Image (tube, rainbow, N blue to C red; front, side, top):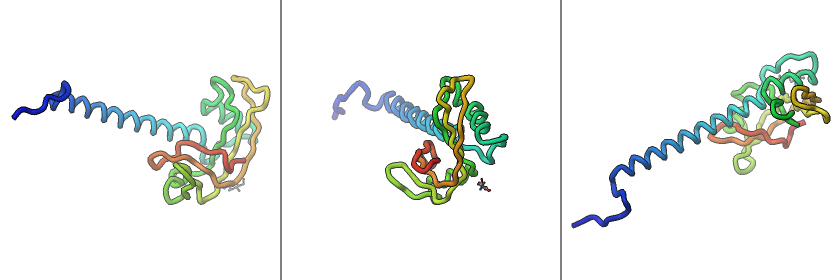
Length: 154
Ligand SMILES: *[C@@H]1O[C@H](CO)[C@@H](O)[C@H](O)[C@H]1NC(C)=O
């Protein structure tokens, strides 16, 4: 009996190629997820809160330090002053599922929202600040927060 001649690769080098592609896809997925959590940390995590003379100067400093003023002055960004473990926990026992991959924190956190002043320009980005103590809504990927929703933010 002869095997039906299928495509060009019955069990030749193709399974290996397939495996390689799968591994590559998995690696890329993990890299990008790592980058997203890393991005979340860069953009939104500051604990303990960096000290500055006042919240306005805090925003001017942190927005620049986190690279959010390079190409343009990011219009709005919120920093959360809570331990990283508590933020990660929102995707698990520290949060309630809202929809899709969105979760609300059970706890409230101290946050600072920075908004660019109208005539802000790169190299001279200036911000006003609003602080609050609030629960937050995040998007989770593989158990890690990757995006902060504006829902409850000051
Ligand atoms: C949150 O902020 C308030 C007032 O700004 C401060 O008294 C309190 O200690 C802060 N809580 C935490 C957990 O940092």
